[in-house]
Image 1: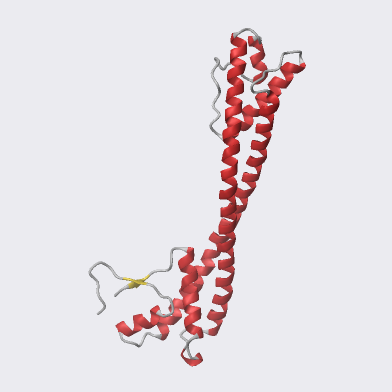
Image 2: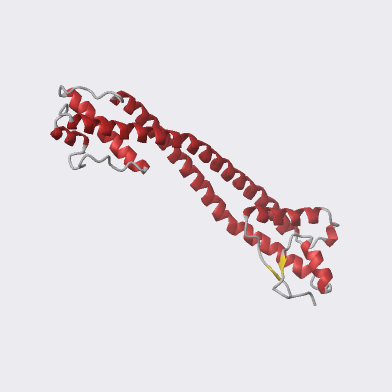
Length: 231
């Protein structure tokens, strides 16, 4: 005999609940295979679950859209920081800036190699170090580095940092709603299970072919093992 299996996606969960509700609404009251109590609960469940799924999709889409703009900020700040550090090294090599001043930027042990700027955390860390280091050196009477100037680097850093913080908010919102959806799936699956149990019990006396067809009208899903047929 074929076996039934609960839906494994949120779309199919909603579809299964709606199938049972719609079938019941088209059936004479005395012939409905699902109890009114279970149907009433299914109405509430599917409405809330669909709202949660739509809310998750909206927050996820917002996060994705914001991430596109964020990646542009990441690219810019990485480019400006890298360029500034390279210019700083050239100034040191030409003795325009003293080697010991590299310590102001946290680059005293860098061996004139640009530090890794691959992650957002590294960009935040090194952006703050470089900006503070240049401002401190200039405040001590040093000649500012130009092309790029630290003011431009600072603008790119602020835009990146603000966008990063915004993206963190989007990610937390998406994760929070996803957790709500995940937690509610337990109640959704229980409701579907209850409906299917009632339907199968109601149609138990019908012959196999007819019984399965009647059950499917309420959204039940059956699977056959390889080579298996209805007896």
